[in-house]
Image (tube, rainbow, N blue to C red):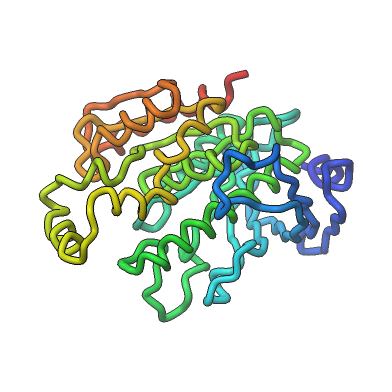
Length: 325
């Protein structure tokens, strides 16, 4: 692990790198957009800039040869809540020699985030560095005593939180790319359920993320849910307000991975879906698969929640996908 710290001071695009006695690394990451961003909608573009970070050693998992770190850096977006304006992440760094793949891991809508930590541990155990990133208004980013969430009935708030999360993750990708142990050609992003939509959307906006894994996700929200009986009350309410199906598609488009799915055609995409998914209809996975160039899709005979029974075989597909040359 000593060479990890030595290498941080090398030519890895870090302007500064300081280690304190409590093993906190501080540095500056220069963010430079890949390409001209012509294929990236204006709301998700980032100009060239620099941002600071802190990386704090957390603990060691000697049985798995993994070291854990806590990463913090400022969000490029200033929301009304100070707690939400610092991005928090956990870095699972395999203690191995040489370059390794690196992947951003995103969490599900609810729960204690144990699934994302389990996935990150499995990836690191298999020689893949995993950066588990808290999305906007999750974990320590959630204002104390407030009920504010990433997703809400407030359209403007939700769209702003989605945008902030994508831009946060673009910075996270630049940070991960800067690490001396990371193979830049095998940089990726993985998300489950809500995280899968954010992973696909972010990969569409960030060319650094060449490997993409969508677990229980897809695209085409309106087409998938508009005629669903569970959506009937909302649909009737929207129609009463004068909103047509076309209007709704236009409103949702900025946050729907189907909108810019063509950007995924030059990435390596793996979709894992449930044939009986009651939360994310299978046709959403099918739609994203079609729009992104019909790359690899793996189906399991399960629902959204029973998919956990297939985690072991799914992880084998994921590890192979992320480690492939």
